[in-house]
Image (cartoon, rainbow over all chains, first blue to last red; front, side):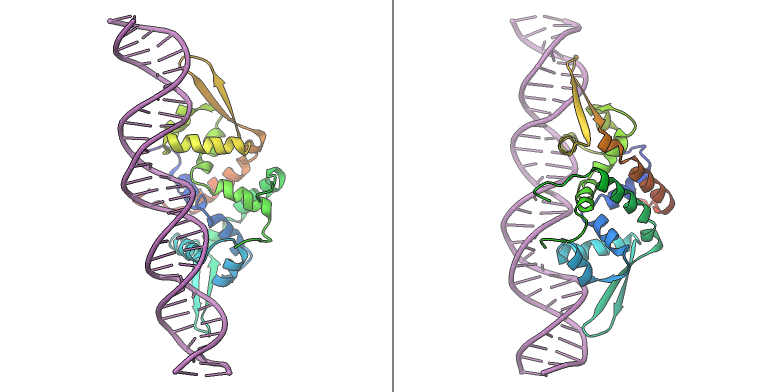
Length: 107
Length: 107
DNA sequence: ATCTTTTGTTACATTTCGTAACTAAATATA
DNA sequence: TATATTTAGTTACGAAATGTAACAAAAGAT
């Protein structure tokens, strides 16, 4: 469990996308820049985790964070070019899910 | 944090793909049917988690499990049609990672 | 002085993960 | 017979991530 010849970029990418909520947040932000509270309202994620994920995504340069000193404060998150470049990925996942995922009682 | 209008199929799909290791396992199995020990050798995942993930993926009908009563026993995992249908997704992730993911010391 | 709203943060219980040791099956070897 | 070998797991247990709910800061409105 140490060094592997698996493409390191793919592995790192999957490590990011394969983290709880990241994919859904990106998909949501593909609709356009949104404030914290709006993202939170659209996804089944708690404030704590949303803060955490957005911070990580900012560090990975997937999103930018803009603070507007209004009252009350407005904080908007927007995908970077790197983040927007994930649109084809999300599209393929959508296509796959539409065709293959079946819903049960628990969904 | 209850009912959301987000496409339920997409959400369920992301819940699967957005789980640690699942993406890498699928990507590995896209190379062809493989036995347990081989998958384990190719990925930085422990036996415990690999067992767990493969069991979940079997329940989701992403993989099939075949036991060959050889000596010692051989257990092979193979993607189902549903699993193979994720190839375009993996391809898009690869493309994105190749173009956008940058490696640091920790990767 | 108190209320309201947004964007977080903190505390704490629950769940998942990672590591290493152990087990089962079934044959080969001493 | 007793021991060793190999694969495919399982178990125990500490570490890390997650979920829930209560709290905090800022700053204008009442």
